[in-house]
Image 1 (cartoon, chains in turn purple, blue):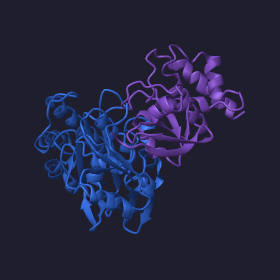
Image 2 (cartoon, each protein chain N blue to C red):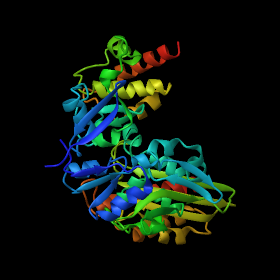
Image 3 (cartoon, rainbow over the protein chains, first blue to last red):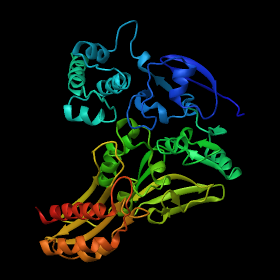
Length: 157
Length: 287
């Protein structure tokens, strides 16, 4: 039986503390300990992007991040993108443009997309490169790009 | 699923980290974890104790009189976009931008890519052509390790279990040429998110149409990333004519020893390596 370790970090804007087994992945802490099931597990090997969250503002695959490594850092999940009841501009745009089919990849795509919008990237070729780690097997990329265009426009309006 | 690990330490000083690594021969450092976590999850690596070196702040890029020093924990996307790296070792910036996809690049580190010692490590061929050296520390002191001496075999380095990579030193280019070409080319089923089937880093200096400096290194074509010494000898001081390019692609076959594996048969790797080499030589010839 291994000991638990104490971790505290800012999760979706709130300081939170957890006592978890040392080998816990950030993905499992989010889903099982914090009850934030919006983040999905796809491949579990960093190849599909379904589990993407923001760590200190940068998109990372939460299946490959040790929860212990997050101590003192800031994590934002799909649940933390909306503020004061208002959706993030990219979430808004995804709804308007119909950027969702089966929806399993959507939380990861929205998190990476929010990071793309925050970075101020405006070129479609660059969107494709930055989104290439988020697989949509329904292949709904065209409408996701439309949503990125709309949200990037909103940002610069 | 939790990883099968008993302890995770997060030392706040380098001394403490080196002590933890020295005290427990089964302890291993972890930074981004993009290779290590997958290997632990699959049971390919059993590690009882992890020492998280993230808090040590080894993530700075510094200009020095004789080149550039990149901290071991610098993330790939930082390296890919850094102006100084683009100037001193453009093939490294290019390679870092082709490791996995963006979220992996935000997490994967230069030191980790090297310590993992995959024959396919994208950052290895550029560092081989640049004659980079690792700054390595243990409780008994520091030493410099040429990147060419680091790789022993697939997943194996020359480092002792208690040694930690602190930084990678890239010397500034000493010779100037009329025209310099430096490229990193990678073959795989997709541009992003793939492990190289073959990769090539090339540094060429051209004067009056003659190849006056040539350094080549390849990934995924042998048990470790390798320099292509036979090809370099074949090219040095000559014009990249069609005949010479043909000779170089034949000489390349002596520099590499690819195997059949899940990603490609050896015969394909031999052909693809020659295609990448010819592409760079074509650029040198002005095609």
